[in-house]
Length: 304
Image (cartoon, rainbow, N blue to C red; front, side, top):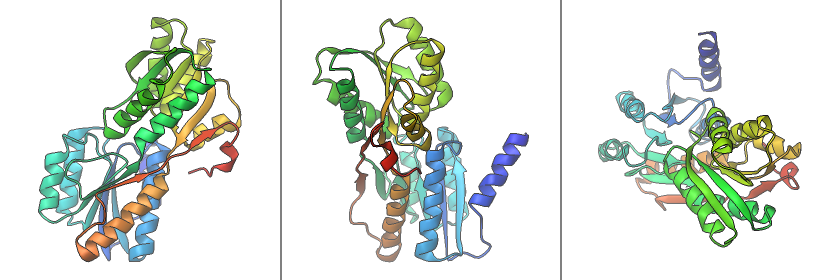
C-alpha cells in the first residue's frame, strides 16, 4: 500500500489538475511504471500548456494492457466532457468499436504509439523500420550466422510491426536461424527474465536475442547473466536504462532502435490543435523515424 500511495502522490505532482481549464484532455497509456509512457504523458502536458495555456486539465490513466479497463477509462473521459483524448491502445482492434462510437459523437481520439481502429489520427514510431534496423544490426554483429530468438510481447500494432521488421531484415541472412518467436515477454523486465530463462533451458546455442522493448531486454540480460550464458541483445526503445547499458558496455548489449515519445506527444498535440480549430487533419497516420543506438554512439543521444 505504501508503494501505491507513493506512486499516486508522484503522479498527482507530475500531472496536476486545474479547477478551471481552457481545454480538458484525457490520456490512457499502457503502463505508468514504464519511463517511456511517463515521458510521453509529461510531454503531452508540456505541449498542451504551450499550445493552450497553463490552465489545461489533463486526466491521466493507465490501462495496464487491460482492454475492458481501457474501455471504462474512455467512457469516463466522455463523462468528464473532455475536448480531446490521447490513446495508447491496449488492443487496436478490440478498442475499435468504442473509439469509433466516441469519435462519431464528436470527441476526437488521437492514437499514440499504437494504432487504434477508428482513431481521428495515429502518431507512432515507424516500428517496421525500428525492427528492421535493429535486426540488421544484430545480424551484422553475429557475422551473419547463428541462432536467434525473438522475445515477443503484447500483440499490439507496435510490437507486431517490430517483429515484422526484424524478420524482414533477417531473411537476408540465410545462415541466421530464428529458433523461437513465440515467447511473450509482456513488455516488462519480469517477463523478459522469465522468457529468457525458459529459452536458455529449452534451446541450446542461443547466439542472439531481439527483444521488442528495452524492459524486456533488461530482463533477458538478467537471465543471461544468471545462467553465465553468452548471447547478444538487440532491442527497441532507446530508453535511459538501455542507453546506460550501452554506455557501460555491458556484456551482450549491442544496441536499441530509438523511439522518441516526446516527439510523438508533441506532434499529437499539434495535430489535435488543428482538428479542434478546423475539424480536419492533414494526415491520418504520422510515422516518426527511428535511429540505431549502439555502444559507439550512445553518448550522442539524449536521455528521455
